[in-house]
Length: 184
Image 1 (cartoon, rainbow, N blue to C red):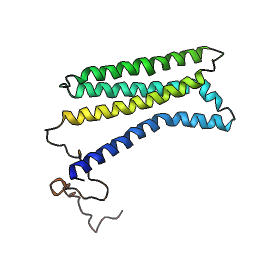
Image 2: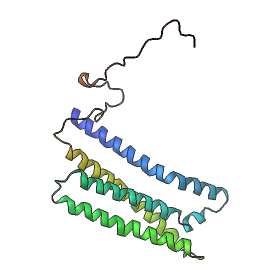
Image 3: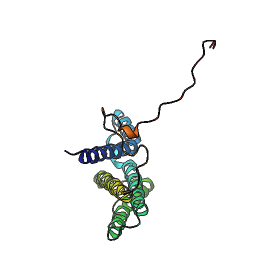
Image 4: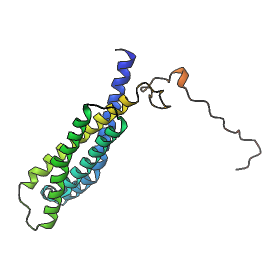
């Protein structure tokens, strides 16, 4: 495998880990709530409350932000602008709108219909998929928009165990030396 392919693979892997770290960070409070309900013997309540719709709405909002970032980063997208706008509309109408409607309906109703237990996890899965797609598209467009420009310090980090290239090594720190008469 060439060095360029290795860098692209390392970059893609790092982006994947970063994306799923974002998703886990968003879902962590809801996991804690679900664990508490499991402890109390009320795990089914998690599916009948607005928790999963809230998580789906948060991820949908993050996805829209990433899609917009992809749009504004590279103004020379040509035919791809319509596709990104389509993904924004898809996120709004398939995830964000239904999640908000479900949240309002669940919180304003004493009796929650049983289908909510099936719809909310599906919304969350779709939101995770759209957020992952949004991050991928945003990163592709961001990288494409910066091609041909000089790399900024820290753009390409070496893989684990590799030393930085000689022209990119950091300058040694110039720290003042302690003298022997300091009595700390």
